[in-house]
Image (spheres, rainbow over the protein chains, first blue to last red):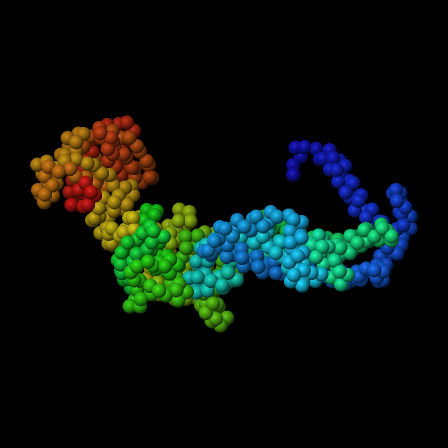
Length: 274
Length: 352
């Protein structure tokens, strides 16, 4: 950064642009611990009553902890399976001579281009037939299959950058093809695995439409559906409660970002430097 | 261990790259596969190590037929052009990787790694990663990794192509030293005739999937079987003139210069068109058979200077001379050819 332009006009300009967003975040949090009347900018009193959902179950709703657990299971199972399948499939597509390989690559692209909503009715019917409607495993399966095209494509791209000679050297050193993959190639695409894992987890954590349609039941409800139900309830409308649950919902995501932001940046600078 | 290729054939789908090639590499010998790009030299190398499947013929190590043996079981060490070190492992683990796959004990691996590291002079680097090494150091690590299993055969695929000029000189002698110390049978693939001549016991020169000549470097330089081989060896390269054989002489058509030929060739080729090759060291100011032309190019190589002399019909003779009184581009010179050292080829390029 050099001094060939003045900094303060930039700072003022950016502050004006980002000001509203920052204000929104501040008041989102402030409103969860005060009873500020609508329209007022000045917080009045400190209270924890909007956070009571943590200890007591709201009538007609599942416990927040059950919903959190469901969300966690949903996001992490999705992540693990997406990682395992994508890294294997990506390797096969990048390296092995499969029959119909280019057809497969093309169809993955097409699959990725489908908006989820257009598939909902078909998926609903299939799950109903399989008896997986209103179950966590059913919606997890659907989420995985919709995440996979992106995952496979990303992994294939990263495998393509690993040099062939490393694999030849591995074979020559006496490794089986499987050992070459696990011991030599996978470590070289670690940034991709990290990034894909985090992205899948976040995608699972924030998924709304699939659980809403396919697993709406209280027992299997996830946080996004729980949150939506709050605002859809016209009888007990409570804006402050809605905001509190919202903050609660987004906290893990923020924590994840703080921990892994360097790894996430890695996906752009990645590659196989030693 | 001896390597024998017996009618070895390699195809890529319908294209036959190498057709029934025979080659024997003797035990403890270092041989160069020399040729331009696309001549099949790397294909041959990758077939010897088992990465390419063979489409016909046999490959033998010693007396053992390894044609259908997998790469993993062939016990061949390979040094790749890009060195192909594993970027996520330290130098020590890179070198020890083949032993780790064989489940040797940690102490044993450590001992062997230290031993080989000493031989290739990389002891202080064992804890570094490949990314932190210079090209020459990476090359040494790659050699160590290839040699640690005591392979029957060492294969080197353009090992010096990724190094800068001074390192290339150093590694040339290092690789040769290590090969001789271990007494291993080695095959070097290269497109650089200097590497092939300086490092190897014998050279197999290849063109379009065929071996054209196998000989010791000196023999090949002095007695090439064809104009292709003559043109490949030697730097600056040999120059060719085309003309007719008349009355025991080769007659250069544009100047009419007569260069005496041996009686045998003069008799058999009388009246025919032939091609003569004249190496730059045999076209000198004090040569016997004078021929006149114009200096069209000069290149100072420090101790020596290279001149191109263009004859009236546009053909070029090259001369390399120690530094002496200035000659300038455009000057007319009359230098002499040592016609006893002239090589004569027929119009198909075969040596006569």
